[in-house]
Image 1 (cartoon, rainbow, N blue to C red):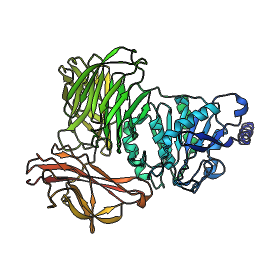
Image 2 (cartoon, rainbow, N blue to C red):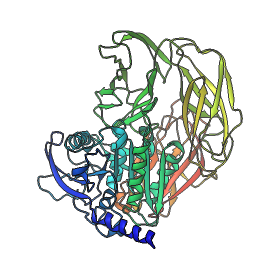
Image 3 (cartoon, rainbow, N blue to C red):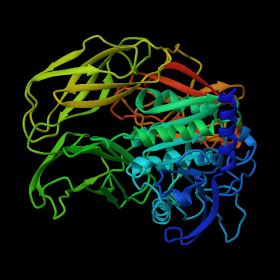
Image 4 (cartoon, rainbow, N blue to C red):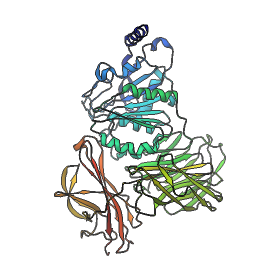
Length: 618
């Protein structure tokens, strides 16, 4: 009896000491105006003398820093059974800051769409504002002012922002959570905004813990499943939890507990990291990137360390066309001895052209690399430096889950010395991966040269959509991610569009006459033409996203058909416009896997089909 009386007394005492909720403003130099925020402080903040970790929470559509809009109130009160931010802060050493995503297009406008994303309508760039808000909070309140004790979270559009901002600033944020946010939006500077897809930006979260909250009755659930199907197998510190809930913030205490665990068990700064950024100029982990890009695109830095990196600027990730005309200047963190020369080797992956020169570190120990937008491997040092740059499936046109995959992986030596003969060992952190040949023995590899290494494996799970593999060579662990697809039956009910006007579906359920592809319009794939592959549905067609490794095809053109007017998510279906190379011989048969997204909100369906397209005469 005494135990239960004590427990009841503890609950009453906890509820009697409420979190302190303050609505404050500060002057933003980045957004050039007064900005609002709400801050949740522990009950004893004024007397404890403690310093606290901080979670920055980003609200959703129609909401403000102090207004729930059309959603349940997750700040305080009885909604969610009292499982709110204030209830958690009342009993934990934590500060929560809820920023204001208000983004009026004209002064004083009651504009419900926050953050300047999809569509991009003002010049306010909220990711640029985040470091300024962090600096203000750290200077004004007793915070633990380091990345290990700083996190982001958010609901819906704010959930998207939480992951975007956390991934843009992994050097500022140690953990990020997301309550039912869309997996993609158009973002970036107005005039050349680009599609940002979390599925493809997973490399931004090295050294971070991430959590995605989903709902069994949420209208975004299809896209969450698609995202988790990739992140689950490629992100080692990603977790997800599905609630029997509509769109909202179920399990607020569970998610804030996730962040408290992350504060107590921070991940170290990664020794090797990657980063993708939609802005032409950015800094991350002490590295600075400046470019002259004046068009939509994404700058990708991969496998960055003291010994080098891979760089490219693309229309979209992972395999969009390279923006070769871009001038890219990459300046390292202060990693080298000031004034000492370093041997820098640059390998252009398109044709294997090698440039090598000595570059002196500046007075702060930084090196600057002048590059362009084409994929390039950069090595720093006098030794041998292995790098994996891609793979090719040789026993098919794509890799099928549950079936043996025979492939070849391209290995480069981007160093200044020969790589001695040795073995490469294949490993995977994913379960159910069996290697037919766990090791490959290689001969010597001269500086700037490459070799194809055989890789044979099977993933037992027939529903798996990606496999992560490491090539272990000495002390080097080189990562490779290979998309997997389900077994697909051969289809004959498709049409080739090569410049003809066709009635097709747009925005999921609308229909319109569109001219797809470029060519003579005879319905055949001719050398030099660009085509679309269409599947009939009633009196119209659906365009397919295509996958192939055929050397006759440039498959880098991808189009996004936005479905926001149908499912109100902000995401899209994709279709491809492959270009048949002019030298492709007549009679050659192109094998491709077609994927069509079929509307069935909130659980859209995917149709896969294997197709064969004969190349006609020129």
